[in-house]
Image (tube, rainbow, N blue to C red):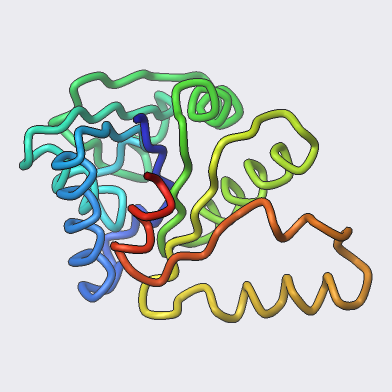
Length: 176
């Protein structure tokens, strides 16, 4: 299975997250899955990619050519696809992936999560979306979404199209 990862590319990502990210990558490889991600060397992206690579897995990075102004590339990709835009990048993520895992990240991660969530809600894909809530990182966001739903701002059923996992075991139970 091709697993798309959305997560932080920041050098300042806390070690408590990157350690779990490395383990996620290790388990992706050990379960004979492959990784599709933004191609970054740091943060959650780099930790997960390193875990996949060091355990013999396949790593595909997808990034706009100009991203090197902001992030270092992960040098051990099996394939690295350069795009002209972030939109092209996100379209390739959708095309080349079977499931999406969202780990702690910033505004780029939220953009990617909400886009893939919206597209699923609008029946543009039917792929599994897993919000990996490491150390309760996404609790406030999930609460906010539930509050928005309860106030009638999010339609009935819209929050049922993604899963929240609080452990690695839960992530892989949802994948399998």
